[in-house]
Image (cartoon, rainbow, N blue to C red; front, side, top):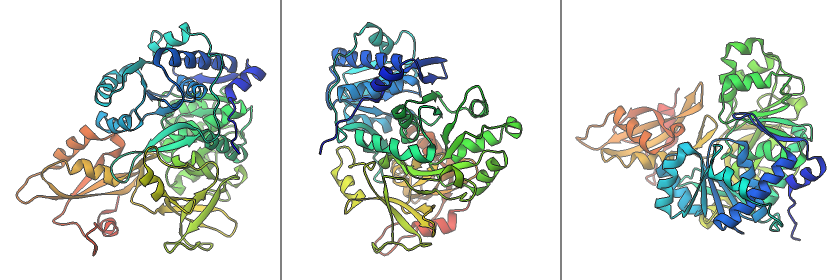
Length: 507
C-alpha cells in the first residue's frame, strides 16, 4: 500500500502557528510555525517559477548552518523535488563529483562560497545559481516577491526527499537516498528515548549537510512541533553557555565526543549547572569512558546513540534512566529497527561475541543515488551491512567495538582511507601508500600515511601535507607520515592493514 506523506509544517502552522519553530542564533531571528509555513510556500513557488524546479529535480545547497536551510528542505518537499545539502568543508575538486552525480537544477550558496559555486556550475553544467545568507540575497528577494504556492505536489513515503553524500571506499562519495518514509520513522524511533514532544527545545550544532544535524533531533522535533535553535558553526563557549542557561530552556542536544571535550576544557565548565531535563546525546564515533565520567561528575550524564547516514540517524539509543548504569553502551535497538550481529560466516553472533551490525526496517535507505553496484553490495538478503562491529550483552544492550571496515572517524566525520590514498597517489614520487586511523585525544582518530617512495625520488613530509591540503577537506588530512621501504601484503597482493596498525597504530 502506498502511504501518503503529510506536510508537518503546514499542520503545525494551522494548529499552533504562533509557536516558535526555530531560532537562527547567528542573526537572532525567531520564526513561528505560521511564518515558517509562509516562507516555505513562497520559496517553493519561486523555485518553480524562477528556476523551473519540479518533481524529481535536485536543489543543491552549499551554505553554513542557518534556519533557512530547513526552509529549502521543506520547500523541496512541496515541489516533490530533492534536497541535496553539500559539505562546505570539501574542496572544489571533491565537490565536483557530487555536483556532477546529482546534477542539480539550481545551486543555492552563501556569499563566501560564490567562487566555488561558479567553478562548480561551469564544470558540471549547472545553469542556475542563487545567492543566500544576506539581506539582499537572491534567496530573500525570491521569497519577498513570490506568492504562496497554491497546491503542493503529492508525495509518498517511497519518494526521495534528500540525498546525503558520504565518503566512498572506492574514492568517490556515495549519495545515500533519504525517503519521506525514512524521515517519518526516524522521528518515531527517536521520540521514545529522547522524549521528543511539542515541548522539546533542541540546540543544533552539527552541520546540516550531515544526518546528525538534520535528522537525529531537528527533523523529528519539527514532526512533533517543538523548537530548534540553529548554530551557524559549533562554538564551544556559546554551546556551553546555552546548554547551562535556564532562560534558553534547551532540553535536547547531540554532539560528537570532540564537542564535549572542547566544552570540558573551558574554565566555565567547572561551575556550569545543567537542568535535570536536559538530554545530551553523544554519537558519531566511539566514546572514551573518561569523557562520559567527566560530564557525569559535572551533573550531566551523556546519552549515547548509534546510527548512520543510511539509517537516517539513530538506530540504537540509551534510555535516559540508563545513562549512568550502562555508560559505554549505545543502548538497545530503536522501536522500528531490526538489528542483527553477524559473524564472518553469516551466522548470528551470540551474547558477548563481536559481530557486524546488520540493520533492517522502514528507516533504512533503499540504496545509493545512481549507484546500483554500491546499493547491491551494501545489502544481504534485505539487511543493510553497516561495516561496524559490536557486542550485545544479556540485557540486549549493544556496545560498539570497532569498525568492520577500514574507515575511521575524525571529529565525527567518516574518513575512508581509499579516498585519501587516491589523492596521495597523484604525487609522482609515491610508489605505495596506505592510510590508517590512529588514536587522537581531541579528534578521536586522525589519519597516518604510510609511504613508500619511488627509487631515487625525494619526498618530504611538507610536500605531502601541502599536496593533501590542496585536494582534501581538513578533517581528511593525514596528521603524521611514516616512510617505509615496502608495505606488507597478503597472498592476494592486498595491503595487510592489520600489520600496519600493529606497527604504526600508536597515538
